[in-house]
Length: 487
Image 1 (cartoon, rainbow, N blue to C red):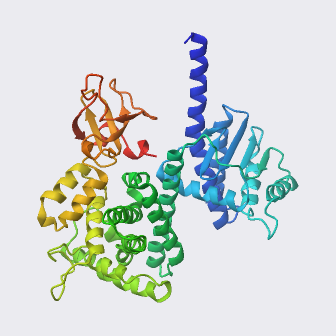
Image 2 (image 1 turned 90 degrees about the vertical axis):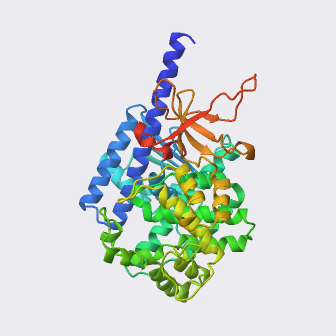
Image 3 (image 1 turned 90 degrees about the horizontal axis):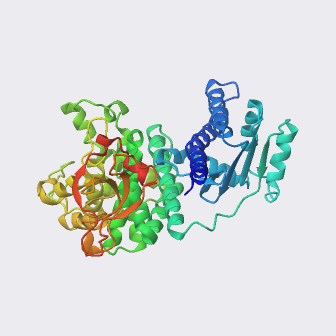
């Protein structure tokens, strides 16, 4: 490549990098502005701060392009033709913006660099009125644009819906659907738990739709969804944990041959297995020091609290009674040596044993206020070898078959001095010890933001493996967040 071509390629790469990085900032700012102005009056400090962030986010994009063009097509968002790849904690903002554009039958937002702060303010106000009047959906973009012009807005333009880009292959579309399913499920779980903590009723219908989405996704492409369980949000642990347990449980149930209806019931039970914690004081849930004996007794009461909470939901929501049993039994262990201690001898239900395995794996591999995360391969080894943990060995084996010897999100050091993040188990059952990975750090020590996919079962012409695993490592040592390489 000549110097001029290399220089041009570098410029294009730099601009696309700005689109990706600042585009994410802009999208989060737009979502925050919409939420703030919906809740508070315009003069509120939070609203004004959100509008300032929105203006600054757009200004950064205008530094490389005179026109900021955001396009929404289905589940995809583009900034000046560069598709955004979002971290999971940014999906709440994405969902809010996507819903606003979908309700308003909108697909394009174009903004000239001469836009004023007042025009941004008017845009947010108009978008909050995005849903079209009855029978007027086709021309809604024209209606909203007219509303902007009536307020003196001359540098912002709204356009109608777009078709999802055809160049994206089926695998990429499946990944996007998985991300959307996961984000919706976390939002629903958060709404249920917070609602019950504040004494509000839960939206059971919305929760059922979320579980149905998880079941459908696991049945169609479980790899895309189970991979997202590695993207744990420390601040949102209570909610992401419940969703992860639901995903793992449904995937294990699928391997056991459960019917779709049974998977649905199992998914509901798994999503709500910890709902009793909504009745545990928040200061106890977030306590960093060791719990006192009295505090531990309160924490151990959450299975009972879960039964009571689900019984109340049953009155209006037609929830399966198996959910109550699962909430009560998921910490009992197969020898019934856990808690709560039953009054008389009992055999644990299959759903409870499945949820217990999923719960134990996800909890041990997650960082919390009082616990460091343990590497996934260590957790699996402990669950399998230490029978005192009380997990059903058949179900632990199914979990190993599901996630592989090196589960998704594991960070591996290779004999090539490269560091990779496990993306999925190898589809070849004979190669469970050689997963599919993403390059995180190259052999020269450079962190890769868009790392190449590396199949550790790939061989040379002579039949030797090109790369082999030296050891599992803690990603935090290298400043790596596995989730960044799995979105």
